Amino acid sequence: MTTNDRLGDVLHYTAFSSHPDGGNPAGVVLDASGLDDTAMAAIAADVGYSESAFLTGPPEGLAGTPGRAFTIRYFSPRAEVPFCGHATIATAVALAERIGPGDLVFATRAGTVPVTVTREADGTLRATLTSVEPRIEEIGPEELAEALAALGWPPADLDPRLPARIAFAGARHLVLGAGSRERLADLSYDFERLAALMGKLDLTTVQLVWRASDTVFHVRDPFPVGGVVEDPATGAAAAAFGAYARELALVPAESVLTLHQGEDMGRPSVLTVTLHAGDPKVRVGGAGARMPR
Image 1 (tube, rainbow, N blue to C red):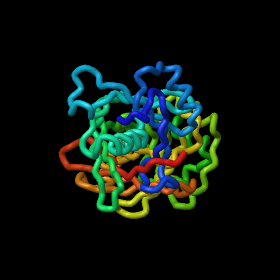
Image 2 (image 1 turned 45 degrees about the horizontal axis):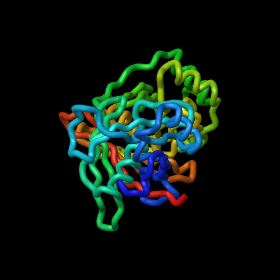
Image 3 (image 1 turned 90 degrees about the vertical axis):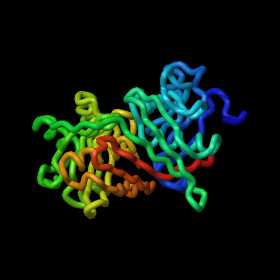
Image 4 (image 1 turned 120 degrees about the vertical axis):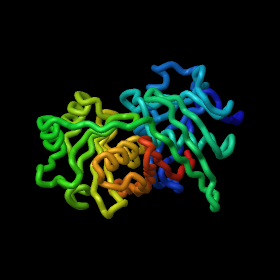
């Protein structure tokens, strides 16, 4: 770290874009060692982004190069969340600017998440995280009907090729397939009704997906349980979606998927999801950049 990174200082970075006007902003506190839960929650609420990340030293036994292994916690404006992909990417880029690109290890509430940061030829920093082991589960018909009612989506607007499932790769997300790009673009939902269902099902976001081609998808992520109408780039949901797509054989076991998010919010984001045959974990990568404040 540098002498300018004082205890509790909040840095502002965007993830999944090389430009500060795109991607998903995150607050990053590189030294949260003197902050308790109440202070971290208050900082996250004051920052107002979908999540802020707080770093402290690694727990005993965490593997990783000394000085490149950390404990990380994530707070939305409303609550702590077990894992946040975009704040992980943002934090990794912030660290790489200070200690150099390379391998990092983060201990999260969801498990250990390795991250590799590289510097591209134009100087852009790009971070790729490896998820915890994912899992997929069914959603009951009553819960699905309630989700659609909260969204204002008739069942006929769903894409039957993308069946509804709950997917986990560090946090739980309901995946719903939109039958058209127009359906995806028209997002106006009952905030409190959807939040109530998500609280009941322990969901972090609802990931709405439109398939543009074999490997290209457009996604949107309502996040009312975090006090945010919509997330412009959701790394945890991207990891969960990669596991979902592989589990349902929607893509080959060895695949690189491109997810476009944030376009309908004016914050375009690009998330790269990499699947390796024989490895259940999912890689999610993207660029990051510091935001002027």
